[in-house]
Image (cartoon, rainbow, N blue to C red; front, side):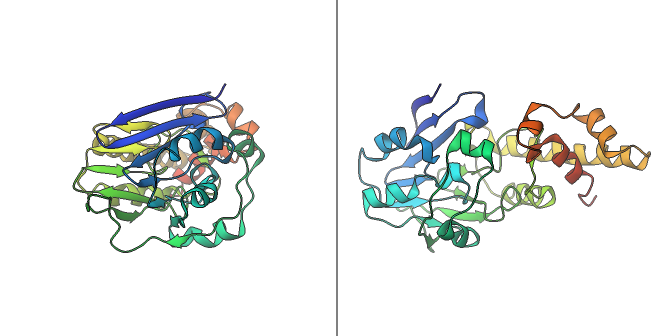
Length: 268
């Protein structure tokens, strides 16, 4: 069953959409602050997203990264509002030529179309003049970029947060870089994290610190067990339990095994 939920928190509006509602990560929130849109939602949810974005004019669309749930409707929104979406430089070529998505992701989000973008402009602002500061945060994706709004104490986090405790990792994620990115944003001042899957997280600075603490502990435990002679499979079972349906269904593109494999490589 598709998810549809509208909300308004301070000056932030959002709509949660999704083909399925099997948990937080199968739905997606498109956020709007005034005439600025943060990410565009999955391509198979255009009907719900279009109703949200056509309500009033948009001046800019900012993409946190290229993944299809974040960029999938940007081309249609661009045509509707006569604008060019802005995206992190490292993802722009991939967006322009198009990219393949694994079968499970196509089922959940749909398939993206090639998209013309502009680089993230210098001096990004909301319509009230307050700054929007892009923060490169690779790990989940090479081009993942968070948007820090220091005057409001907000962090639009892309897929940097998701949860205080990860149990799965994509095969193309880099846990060492992800942890470095968490440390980078934790030097900033903010209270509310705007996660497109989890939703608004009050006390978001502490939530991101909790996630980093958990990952550091997981790495320490995994590497300690490996030094005792435990195999990767034995470490997985001890710390996260055996691989489950998501790993098998995604052909291990999203799996516990990926997380443990990366945890064993993180420099300590």
